[in-house]
Amino acid sequence: MEISEILKIAVPAAEERGCKVLDAKGDDDNNFEIILSKESAPVDLADCEAVHRAILAAYDRDIEDYSLTVGSEGISAEEADAALATED
Image (cartoon, rainbow, N blue to C red; front, side):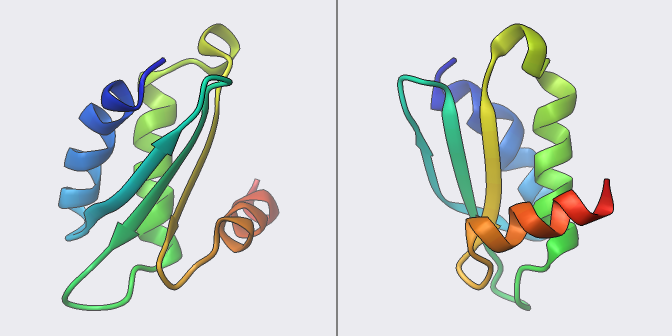
């Protein structure tokens, strides 16, 4: 997978929440990190979840074999992952 493929889903999903993708990284092992920002208010967990879920809906983890973290300037990747894990 390429980060450009992930961004095709992440950018519109972020825009639906009033956010923009501030940064996006991916490596050769299909580990992806998306960082969101929002001008009108802080990015909250619901914003990160919405983008995360949009990408999960578009790409099957069992087939694509990737990991994904969506965070913000105010929420570290570890905090976002921990919050999502407690909701499942």
